[in-house]
Amino acid sequence: MSTETLYKEISLLPNEEKIVLVSKVMAELSSSFTKEKKLNIYDIKGVGKEIWHGIDAQEYVDKERATWER
Image (tube, rainbow, N blue to C red; front, side):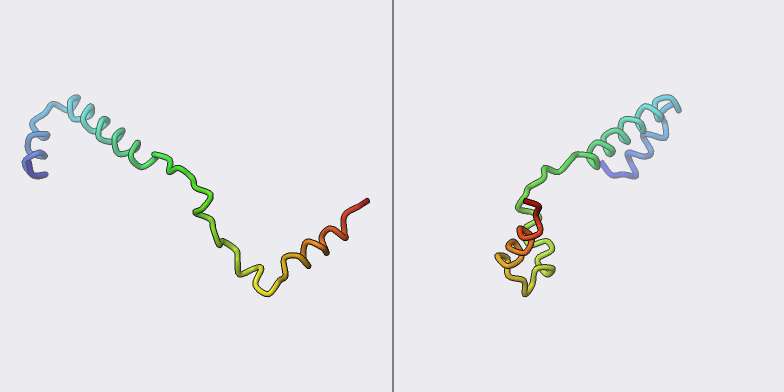
């Protein structure tokens, strides 16, 4: 059924039925937009790697540990 045909059918409905229909369609659209995407830790792989370019990881850790209180 085309959108135009559907619209013509809907236009024949009483206003109360149109409101019910619009409410149902909006609820369906809303739920499809708000479904949460499952988070995956692997999606952030490599984020911020440019910050660490040229920095030796072990040297960094050693310097940080040297600042800890004993």
